[in-house]
Image (cartoon, rainbow, N blue to C red):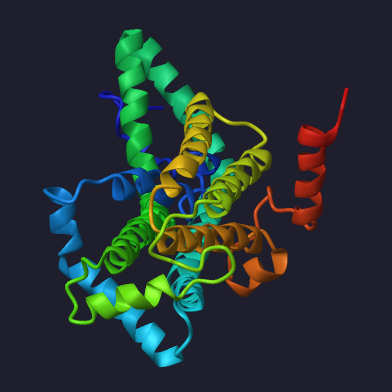
Length: 328
């Protein structure tokens, strides 16, 4: 029973936590960069964009791109792709694995959360009846203690959901800085001494139909590919969610719209940027699929959960066919 003020006995309950599946692990690696594309590509050559283009992080991104190209001696189109693969493998993939590790621990606490929530609700109901609390007071007491118990659970298992957002805070800035650095190179606006020569190298450093990386892709093949890959990422996430909250549905529809909007945006910027965006999105798609593999999850020491499948790719294929290919 609760003590006279309705708090003492509540503190003896174990800790609670938020619903793990409300968090969306698969989205931090690709959708957020897509949303940022519009502001980077459509910015005017002045004001905040000029400050960003001349900032230290963008200068560092320029040095990384120049260093990778100089070290490998590859043409710029392949150097851009190789640099993207290296950054994704060294930075993004480990952070994505850590994100799944945190979310798996959160999910595994759900049975304990439900049990404690039931007990807490009973304790509050008894106190409300005994001390004549109004519904509002009872509800506030329940929520206050629930928040405290949730925080205690996070501390106990060292898996606060905020830790799962570290991927976004690292990947998004990195994506923006490299995009702006490539734009600087393509327009000759880079602050490095080799800016002019780099622009000339990019103009001759393409391949196939995008031989000039400083020009837009007039065929629209690269822009459409970027939109299609990002839509695939969104749909794969949606297929993996058995039940989505209304907020998640709104976010999913919004990201679908942004993925489509990315096509005309990508058609107005230099091909070097679009090539980077496409490569980054493809790696994001591959990363999301890889993190569904039971073997890879075990290698990364991600705790097994109830929602894990022994045949994730088969299940995903079946869900895709049922949604898009079946005719009823």
